[in-house]
Length: 525
Image (cartoon, rainbow, N blue to C red):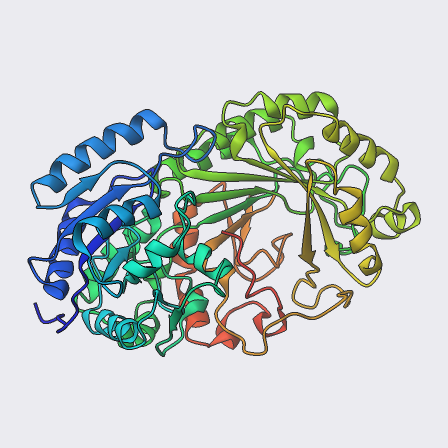
């Protein structure tokens, strides 16, 4: 194989496979093994460990299906001369290899986080040479996408880590204790971290990305990756990873100043997304979405809890194997104790992330932000949540940080410090200039890059309109599709050209005021 490196000689290789809900493509695993052996040599011992299965509370994979999938995968790997280790933590697995294959304190092991069919031999050789030259305890590529080169750790490092420590994320552990170890952080231009690429096959999305890259350039190397993404921007976009749905246009009597207002004479009162369209949406998700990949936000300007079929919709969406997490954004007024209990009884309630829009703790400011003072009602429902000890879903209090409430940040954290409710600080959105400047601080990067929302998101409002971008929440812009007569995939294919234009920096060609938008860098899922 042309993708080869010389003098890359770790004592052994550990492939640490994370629990996954998707089925790993064995053709791709075989390709990863072939590349691995072409780089490290046919005689280099290769081990695989499957990390501990997830709890039944998380994700779409059950412990039984995980166990069955691992047994089958181990049997097949045995035919490929790969030694399987018991399910354990990462450090324990590395210590097994250390005892079997290392003698010198500088002898090193290569660590893969799942399988790497796109392993870059030249890059791997550079990382290993860096590790060996500086006699490092641990070396990893700071800016390298996962799946192109492994990490390396020495025997001395493994002997130094306390025996009682359990580690599932070696990079996080080393970073936390960086003063204790000789760590080499390898950096190789170009810096493409803004793309959040993962070529490791550790998720259904990363496996799809690997497959699409191999279909277009099987010999792709890291040095050409930037140009490749400009040529094939569609590989970043197989299916939305975030779907925001406004179930109801009813704001429960509130007039939030952080959403645009409609022109005089226009009204959305009473609009609810029809259940027939919810069914259509679920069918599309099941047909096209990737396993355990999709984040759904029940949000928008309206109060989702006022949809007459709200609980049924939450039940159906959370129960999908494609849905990884379900965010419910609420003003909190409809969040009665009865609804709190009903949400808790949904079978997949652990996927639910309940976000209460707590923008102030002061009544006069609540009136200024919402047009009416209903703070007491909101806090009453929040207090009911705080009193519960049986919640299976996660609860957040979210503050949009604006000039009017910037001095309340500490108060909000103090208010929820001793509770099970976590605080989120969110950035104020000007909706591409449609709202006045209210930000307490401008954190927008100086360099404008591609838009994550065009790359990953779809927004559907309560009237079943799909605008080009969520910055057009009432679908008043020039590019709008109607979900009654079109599909998610129609929209996804139709807007691919605008995603490509965004990746290539041609923002002015997109039929939205992208150059006035400061939300392009925010990442939902």
